[in-house]
Length: 271
Image (cartoon, rainbow, N blue to C red; front, side, top):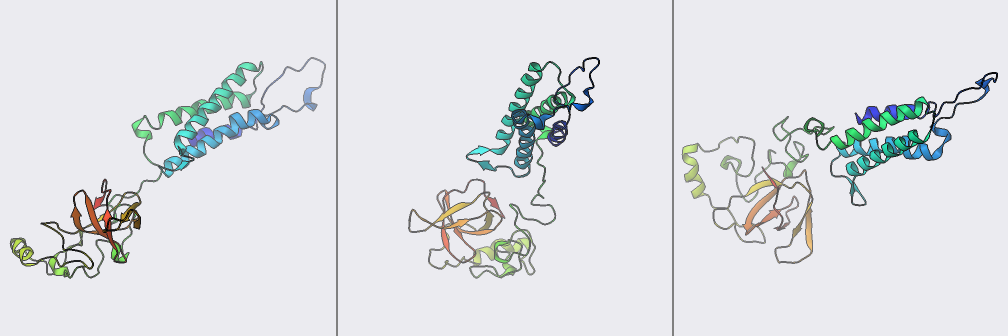
């Protein structure tokens, strides 16, 4: 709806903006019919404003969450489309003989504003333009991580950290491992195997089991000494290893071996 309305609006800007009756006996063929490009105010406030609004709505739908000066692109585009409709309506009321360009422009702005407002409200209009593959589709992990990235990928073929062997079934969710103990022997094997202490820190307390996780948005990683300055930043699309839990926080390890406290664990994706 939005793309079609923008195309129609752009075409309408080249059509006659107003029409007039030619008096009898006068050759009117030598007079050019004006269009929106002959009136800068109408061109910018109706036609180009509508096209820009459509572009903002498309970008917002293709890349959700993008903001400019703290304003969501979708909201700004919807407001601009309503402004274009408002201006077109009062312009056509003010002109006695509206031409095809103005009439078609008014209809296009009605469709544009309707699509912009109905987008967040109507369920079948909420679907994103670019549908990312889910965690179970095509072997792709969540948050944009790609297969074969080495350390940060939980299904990668690399040696498990902290001294665990692949045959122990440790730390690599999603892919079966050769030599993994049978279900009946797993409890006994896990009791016999104690997690080794991590370098520069204490061993995981209690029955905590290290796991892989990814963050939905970039989040700071603070030092274990309680320093207020972050030592690293966890980025979406990469898997990190949680080695210990302290209250509501997690002790996480980055790809280069640094350890720190992840204070905000809301919405993390476990591997």
